[in-house]
Image (cartoon, rainbow, N blue to C red; front, side, top):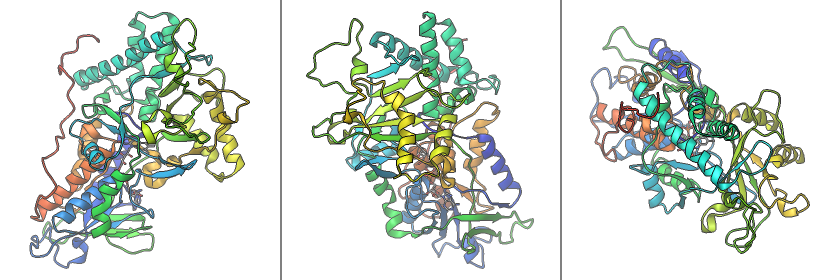
Length: 544
Ligand SMILES: Cc1cc2nc3c(=O)[nH]c(=O)nc-3n(C[C@H](O)[C@H](O)[C@H](O)COP(=O)(O)OP(=O)(O)OC[C@H]3O[C@@H](n4cnc5c(N)ncnc54)[C@H](O)[C@@H]3O)c2cc1C
């Protein structure tokens, strides 16, 4: 699965156990649903017989994709919905901002898998432009020079083949792989066996490490045992070229029109008891910052992936003049070996640089995406850097207290980025066109309402990662009137994604609809929550 980091499932499991045992937590909350009627009616409808004559009143904590979809289904089926949202807007981690005059996604910008993916369907319905970004991946080697096309293709094919093998291996041997074995261990074994020169092997290892930019943490932290749970929906991964804006508008429309949304209402406390007497009304209390009490709970923990956005000076052409894209009319060649990916990159990967350094012990490799390679009007001369792990933590900590419109902020980020972008095709130190017009770093890691930048992945040391998810999915159920939704409770194939969040909200709503004897409008088929299966399940031929 291509994304961010990284709250550990251990943290989730602990939280779920805490919630099922005890009663009070002050944890940060993701979307979660809970029927308000448990508190607002003297006769508790769950425990003293469901009151069918009155539509339930459900509280949802959080207006991210999971909360919004949950609200949508409940509203369609006649429930009253109140949403408590900590921020002053809907969307949660799905959010855009203008950088250098262009609207940019600060959170998700991919749709992972197009086979039976509701977000892809919504993208089509809303005429959102999606781009299947294939090819033109340039690798900048450790000394700052580009690697030629043939070698780059060889490395790239090796990395993707190894990822595929790792999925198969993890699927086949999940129960016996030691919890401390990492994805990097697997890569190192495979590289050792590959028929490459020592230099190519080094490039392969460093390229493999950049898988960390997809998961948000270094791959030595990525559990091999549970790597199978990172597999996502079949089909291509699409970059959302025209941003998630219209998708968000579509997903939020029912809640915005029909729910009572209370913005700027962070929930600070949830109290839920299991009563010894099953017929007694259960009391779950949810407290807002203003001290109001109502309902609800949830988990999370810090993570890492950030965006650094860098739009260049404006362009007048259909494809603006991003200096790193060679003019198609320029017929000069890059020398003996072919460097076409270097001359027109969509992705650039900067392998373990020796030409610039971060603080001691922090891997300084980077990956960026050229938004100048987007189709038509969506193209703009912006580089989107995916920082991750300790490097992201360091950068975020440095800019956290700087004013984004200050020179200091610009200078810090530009000093960090210049060693990288100056390695790209066409850079000239003296050209004003090669000087960033604006720079921006996302601050998800400092955002407690986004799990400090986290999303679901599986880290080394976990022994029951799949079970942790199942426990969270089950929520506290009808006897406590508390359900969890959110990307971390999604079907395995969609964990950590907008699609997963959407499905998880649907599931929680379905459970409430069933409990209250409401309809099933909008629910469609039940989601498949089973483990993702490797192709040729259990049969692994090319790895030991
Ligand atoms: C940098 C980044 C890049 C990503 N890239 C991709 C991608 O390319 N593709 C993809 O599919 N996914 C991606 N993701 C993951 C995706 O954004 C999430 O999986 C999805 O948006 C989660 O939705 P959610 O409803 O579960 O949680 P959220 O979107 O986090 O929503 C939770 C909501 O609850 C609110 N809230 C939190 N605590 C409280 C509280 N105490 N009281 C009241 N309200 C509260 C929050 O303000 C928020 O609105 C990315 C995430 C990040 C951070």
